[in-house]
Length: 110
Length: 114
Image 1 (spheres, rainbow over the protein chains, first blue to last red):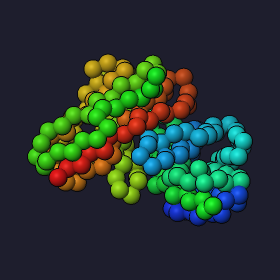
Image 2 (image 1 turned 90 degrees about the vertical axis):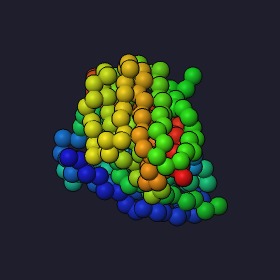
Image 3 (image 1 turned 180 degrees about the vertical axis):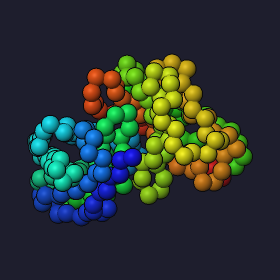
Image 4 (image 1 turned 135 degrees about the horizontal axis):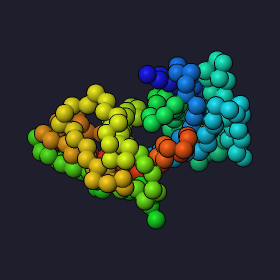
């Protein structure tokens, strides 16, 4: 089955700096790669996703890149703000099941 | 309207009791899921139903039994609760037929077993 590794597990950045979270996956059949943000006491919410026929996608301060050959994808957050502090999960899917990474706790220091 | 709803939000109970968590989605999705999130925040898939048919059944104690009365509902019943069952349980739904799409999560049910 699919295995998703996510790094780092914790990340602290100064407000205004960029944050990068990286994930690798094992199943070459995976074709959908979402990123979720989970705030304290809430369920995970999709912030951006990318499909395997696209190499990069951007939405305001958030961007995701995908390297299918190397089987890795990354989340980039620019101009970080305190409200970006949360746990971020990457995931990979080729069918019914989303396999999640173990999460990255991002802390943005004002 | 809430897309994926769960009840109750909090559940505190004694060891050995039986409890149920209910989930409903109003998105018209064909697939629903139960996840367990422990204190380390890892999201572990437990079960998945597609059009009321069980399609994912991970290594979960048989004290956990899912039930899907229709496409919009997926309930989770837990027998003989143990301390280790304490966690946050998330329901989710997704439209799988037709290609990759967003999975929506419910707000979670925090289960505490005393």
